[in-house]
Length: 185
Image 1 (cartoon, rainbow, N blue to C red):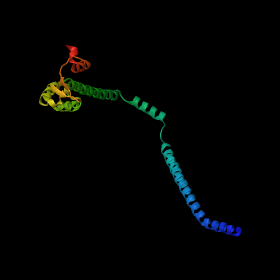
Image 2 (cartoon, rainbow, N blue to C red):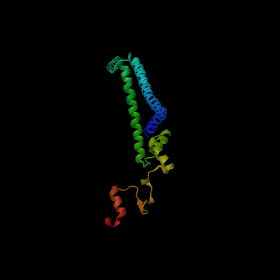
Image 3 (cartoon, rainbow, N blue to C red):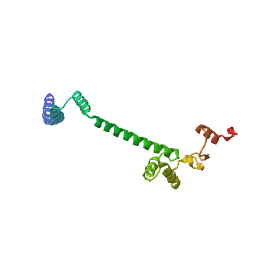
Image 4 (spheres, helix red, strand yellow):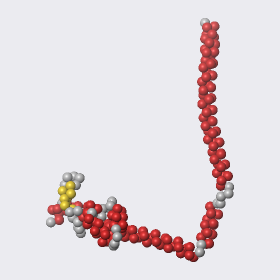
């Protein structure tokens, strides 16, 4: 029996040797591929770093750039400085004019979603902005805000509420009056 056990061990060992080598080769191959990927990435990073270093070799530092910009600013003539101030002033002036037009449109009761469109359309019209805005809103009342509309409106909970155009009450008071009119008799 001991001879049979030895033969089985030898047969098993001999049979597994080939299989063991295949598994070992596959594992080593996968490990080598993983290392190859890491090696390739490391090589690529080294090459990229070398290229960046080569390009940056002739570039000035941040301090040198700042000193150059300061020198450039000092070299400008008074006329150039005045021209820069004038262009900045014109930009500010046009922004101010645009904001005034938007403000007038809001005060006229235009929906906040439609203000840009209305201001654009009215600005393209010839004549005074205020008069054109009034005429445009008269011709296109759909751009007026919901506060300006008279009449009943169906709310989300199914109750009818009355909107008033020029209410001197605060929003909270108006809501309380709508829900509890008996409190304000």
